[in-house]
Amino acid sequence: MDLDAYVLERAGEWDRMGQLARRRRLSAGEADELVTLYQRSATHLSVLRRRSPDPIVLADLSQQLMAGRAAINRGQGFAWRSVPRFFVSTFPAQLYQARRWWLGLGALLMAAGAALTWYIAAYPEVAEHFLSPSQITELVESDFVGYYSQYQPQNFASQVWTNNAVLTAQCIAAGVLILPVIFLLGVNLLNISLTGGVLFAAGAGDTFVIYLAPHGLLELTCVFIGAAVGLRIGWAWIAPGATRTRRQALVDRARSGMLIAIGLVPVLAVAGALEAYLTPSALPAAARVTLGATVWLAFLAYALLLGRAAQSRSVPIDSAAYELPSA
Image (cartoon, rainbow, N blue to C red; front, side, top):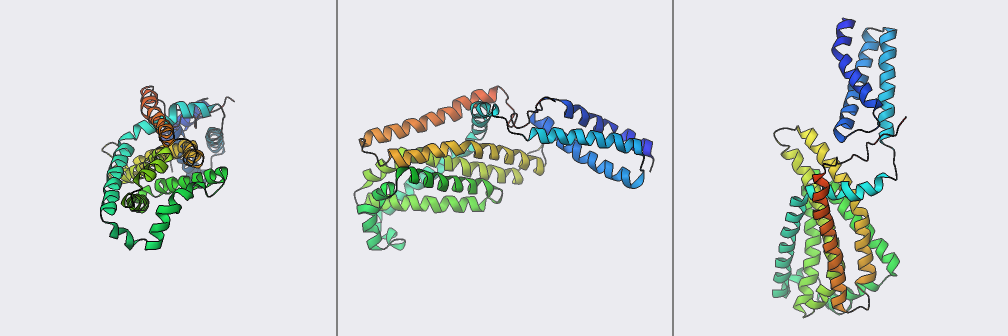
């Protein structure tokens, strides 16, 4: 192997890696470039060790690799100062960028849920394929309302938070396969519509709305976002676009999905608190629904208005994650 030619051909990549490793802050694209250059340079070092063990070249490249690795590891550190920026810029910007997916999916599922609820209410015998007559009676008379007050509020809030977080995470994680997300959405759509249809058929439709709306508006929106983000990841694999490879599109959408998943954690906690404390409270029904709707509208304003402003500032999707401390 011609050592001089090999080194000359790749020296530009090694120098570029060294330049990026010395920077205090990296954009998302620069951080990806640093990782790629590090991986390539590690391969180059392996080749040089096998075929031309020149100690000077090996020592110089090894030193640059150590600097690159140190920069990558520093970029993975956590800084508390990045938390406010994440929730003010990064998270709402990601929600806004994915808005067509979750708004469209949400509208579709709400329409399908309303139609299915109406169908079950109009034809009560349909519910008997899923529930026995005694189960239907108990659901109408006690189980639906009693569900929201059967546990201590703090325990119930934690349980709801966990269940919804798991469902949302499953939708995001399974998005690359698409079909599991559709299955999860279908199961939950059927459960909610079946409950609503039974209650409307029994003349208790107002109870269904009063006990679902205070927390359900925000809770279901979070589920829609998680499912839409998961499907968005899967679609990136199917149709990556004309300017990106499938791998590039998948990595980009997966990174965005992880950021949204992290941001949804406190939002789901708020939804759980509403379900545990507001929904079964002694407040008038109108007040409970109004408070729940207000929180939901505030979240939509956060995602769409603040998100649009954050996107207009061209905030990198993971700028905080790649901020490197000074040496």
